[in-house]
Image (cartoon, rainbow, N blue to C red; front, top):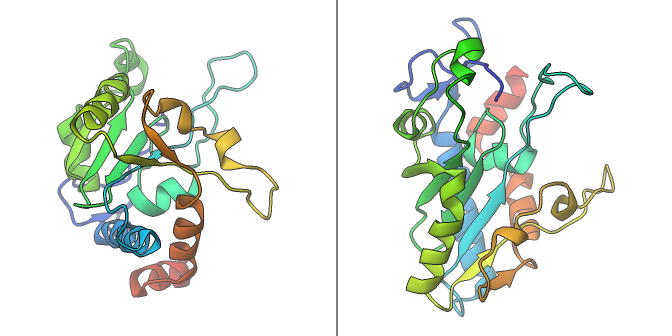
Length: 212
């Protein structure tokens, strides 16, 4: 996990990399999630309001055969929705309630020797202003629990080709394998809906773009 501080005060209403850097409002990411939820509800035309968006964030990597960590850049759709700056996260959004859950990697204790304090889930709840943070190794049980409680629930995952790179996100960061057996997989709606959400920029996004 890249050891890059993305905010000075964890309870601040913004994310920043330093005292002289741009302060990105956390509310910008919440607004992005609300936009997606509204879009998905429109797409389903009220026929399937239930559903859970499931996304896999960018992965950490090492240089060749060494333990040198490569500079991490978050996957763009994941960054748009959550603002998460660390690798190996997953994210879920309830289409009905808008509830947001992040799943963080469970780091080994020896990580702290080289990279500093290992943060717990409450730290990331506050940092990214989401409803819940769990560990990635709890994802399977969570999804199975949702399916058991809501047998007809749809799991919305990304499947679509990036027009610039020609790569399909389902091959780069596949989320479908995490959908529990017997679950209803919807890989037709999320990519288009989320791409369209990113087309129309909010005032907060425009301010950030002007700064960049």
